[in-house]
Image 1: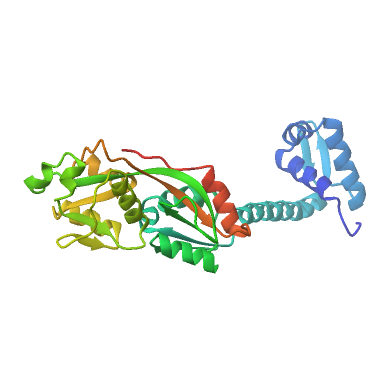
Image 2 (image 1 turned 45 degrees about the horizontal axis):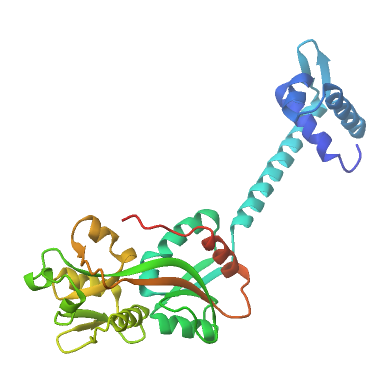
Length: 303
């Protein structure tokens, strides 16, 4: 026997041995019967001895053929294992390190992660959460390669790419105080208790600019709450402590269950954009792969 057998002939031999007929092996391998017969004969020539005996019912292994079949099956299994490993390696990736402002971290990123993790397996996934100013700072400093925040069209030292449209709406509890239930205009907001985000928040900046557009002179004052977390604002609104301005992404469940209601303010529309933020030098690695995938798979509002 020569020191190295042709692996293609060895696979043909394995299939013939398993199915017991040249014709069935030819169909399985998508080859002609003469091609299968030729490969078996060439392998027998390499082995230096017959591997089959031929009979009317098909092919029967010789003792040498039975010995060789064990090796052929092991090689076949090893190649399948290598193929499965290569496919898994194609799904695997490096570290995915991102940043997002609070509303996006709570209501957008989990939807993106769910779809992305169905396609790839990053070695690790880490999400930094802060307000818009913090996310911008982390990207500028190189602490994270890419982030997402709201309320800005441009910012110095970073590149920004629009991703999703959002609307901030004034909301109140459906079983809150009567004086809040009576508000139907921006003028009513002037006297109502409002619940604000902290300085540096993209949400607060957008609300303040919207107030300026409708000439509503209203900022945080005594009696208002100032909170640094979207969920804390939502809980405070549900408790009837005031009116909050929240993203439609953050209140889908509460609207569906009629725990919150949007206050109709036709003279005050607050649109904003969720944007990707990254350094000017471009992206690479897992961050680049994730961003390319996310741009093609934006989530949608359900309510």
